[in-house]
Image (cartoon, rainbow, N blue to C red):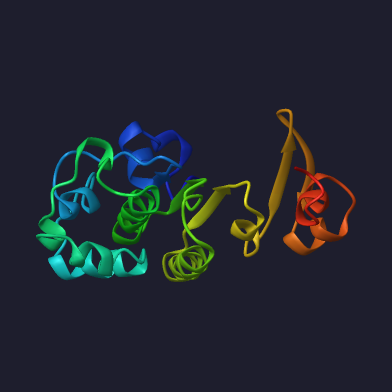
Length: 183
């Protein structure tokens, strides 16, 4: 079962409805902030839903401060925003969509520690409220602190697995990274 869908019923559409991806460099298109947050949504959302999703992604105040607010037009790829703003717009999408499976591929790499921590707390709430399974790909260890399980890979192979605390106490790549021994 993938997100409640039996394997024989797993179509491309079912997969797209079940899994959401937030990559390190998210796709934004030349349209309004509002439309970029709603991008790919099948069901209509109220403006309030969009504003709440933006607040959970800690992008709402910055977007409201732009000329035109949520109607501000983005350049192709979001070139007129910072990397952190682009990532937070993509994260707002997941708070709006509430996927069953969420893949975060370095999705908070351009954020400061305070924003990352607040967004991680919101992702924790999403997990609890919606039963979302989160798969996080990260190099920044702070991103992994609340994970149920961590898999450490080296040269394409799994070399360690465990909880953050277990890996921090076990000799290996993870502990070396945690201690700042790897540069």
